[in-house]
Amino acid sequence: MKRVIALVLLSIFVLCNTFTIAGNDSMTGQTAKEIHIKTKGEYFCFDEIQPIIKNGRVLVPLKCGIFETFSATTDYDHIYKEVVIRTDTHILTLYTDQLEIYNKGEKCYELDVGPEYRNGQVYVPLRGFMESLGWTVEYDGETNTARIL
Figure 1 (tube, rainbow, N blue to C red):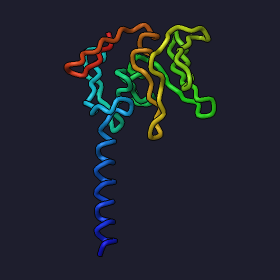
Figure 2 (figure 1 turned 45 degrees about the vertical axis):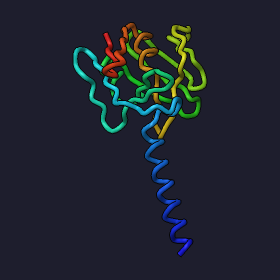
Figure 3 (figure 1 turned 90 degrees about the horizontal axis):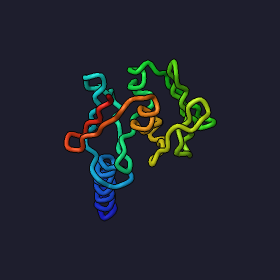
Figure 4 (figure 1 turned 135 degrees about the vertical axis):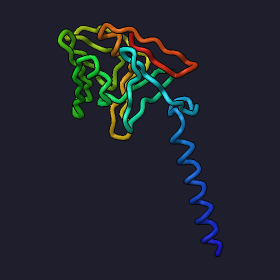
């Protein structure tokens, strides 16, 4: 009987901690809020994989389709841990262990938060890549909305 009670209590403890951790920002412990991104006057619709906040920065899944909205293609090399975003005029690269974005081999942007590999997805800093492509990003903390202008 003691084993059953101990097993039930352990199960409850594990479940409670699992749900608490899933809703928290991995770097600050703050509860994550729904993040909205507005592009070209419309809200971008994320499927199952939502953006995350890391140290106050919005990171989006590389393969979510947001960069394709701006006529870019995306790729990630698992061996070299290299993120690549291409447009007609840019070839942006970033290695997951570095904080510099390069355009055609030349440093063009310094990040304060790097990409993150989580749950089989590569998350990249929205502002860094969009500004490297020539767009402006404004963030409204009250509505948790990043606007790409």
